[in-house]
Each structure stands twice: as structure tokens, then as C-alpha cells.
Length: 175
Length: 156
Image (cartoon, rainbow over all chains, first blue to last red):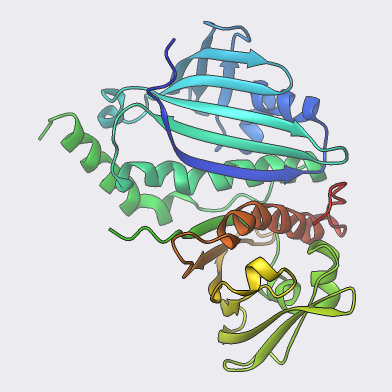
């Protein structure tokens, strides 16, 4: 797969007082992702070409893709197509990469969201709001044993979601 | 098109806006998560703010906005390295937003957004702060949530 066409658009770095194995396990285990990833469960075949999906708590398919690179516990790269929003389903998939660096007593986790088409800021806004919530929740879960208290993220994001759908319709030529 | 670099980073912390404010403005707190750096000021707009590290003043800056516990902004001018001293001061802003927890038994979650801007196009400081803020803010979150900052093996 030619990855050169994917250009990084959103990068988020966090440092977690844990081990690379625990970060890897949290990112790839459904019972753990459901605790920090907006309730989503991951289902992933950990080998290049393997299938990858996220499921919403009510069983709706959330995200779908393929494993591109799998180097436990250092690097995981997957293609990523947002399925829960009809407007987004028609867009070319993006590439999400987790890089896990062992710094001794702490792990540096770098998430990179890369796109193969030019997207305007309205469409990047979902990831730019969502990733800090997800990855800070992951950090809290690994450092304290529990995720952060649940809070109402979606009502504050409603306008941004509508703008994202509109931008996706414009991008795919829909009305 | 504006090519001057701008850094934006958000972190979410299970704490209150008041505790986060104290962590940003109390030198005993900042020393714990900011590699021993003490931030000293009377925290009023227009006042001086200094960063003290191992007894030396490494930043000498001015508070631009101070509205506890929501908004803090100051100039940012490192003095400890000659090549950085010649660069004009940039500006860093801290915004604190509170989300109420959905359960009454649980506390709130606060979102801290750090925006660092007003850099020259060829800034030497910009790449340093881009690496530095995630490190400092990750340690701040850990301190507020667990009572202990992150111990980084590397230098700060």
C-alpha cells in the first residue's frame, strides 16, 4: 500500500506513566477501548491486512478499516473509514497511526491522523475535538485504573458535527 | 496567507477549574510538573511574571490577561539561551472550560486549551515549545489526578 499519499493533518502527543505493553493492550482490546473511546469496542486482527472495526455501544458499526502496520508494542497503523455518518462513508479512508515510545518510566504516545485528499478544517474538527478526549481518557484509565468521569461531550459538539456533515456533502458532490 | 506558526493543544483533566488554576499559578505546584520551574507573579494583568529555575530567572515576562479560574495569558520570552533571547516575545494563553460530570457522585472534567502564538516565521523557540507543552501538560494532568507528577528520565 502506498502510504505517501496520506498527509498528516492532526497529531496528538501524550505522555503516560505506564508501559508500552499496557498502552498496546488498551488500544487493541475491546473491553478496554469501551472504557475510554466514547464507549466504542474495537475488533481487530493484529496482522497487516487484518480487519479492523469499532462498534458503538448499541451495536452500530462506527469505523471500519484494515491493519496496515502492526509492530507490537511500538506501532499500529490502520486505515479508517467513518461508517456511522452517511455523509462521511463516501469519503476516501484516512490513516490513523499510533506510535508508542518507551522513555523509561513513561511512555510517549503519538497519534497521527493522515488524509489522502484535501479536507477543509470543518472536517478535521471532529478529530481535533475527539482525539484529546479519547487519549486523555486512556491516560487516566492507565494511570488511575478508571477513566475520567463521563461528561456530555456531544451536545457541545452538535454544531461542529452538522458543519462536518455539510463539508462532507460538499466534498462528495452531494446536495 | 499567514505563515507564522501557532501551537494549540488541549488536555482534559478530572479536576475542578479552581484546582487547575492553582496548579498553573502556584510555584510549589509548577515546580512539580514543570521540571523544577517556579512561576512567580502577583497574577494581575500588567504585572511581571518570572520563571525561576535553580534560583536563576530564566523568563522575565508580563501578564496580559488574568481572569481566575478561566483565562490566563502572558508573554513568553526565554532568557537562558543566547540564541533564544534575541527572538521577540511570543504569547501563551490558557483557557479553562468545565464539563459537569454526568453522575452526581463524580466530579467535573475540565478542558485546558493552551494556545501559543505570535512567533516569527523562522522561530527557533516554536519547535521547542511544540515538544515541551505536551510533556509539561501531561505531567500536570497526572499530578492533579494522582497526586504525583510524571518522572521524566530525560532532561527538561
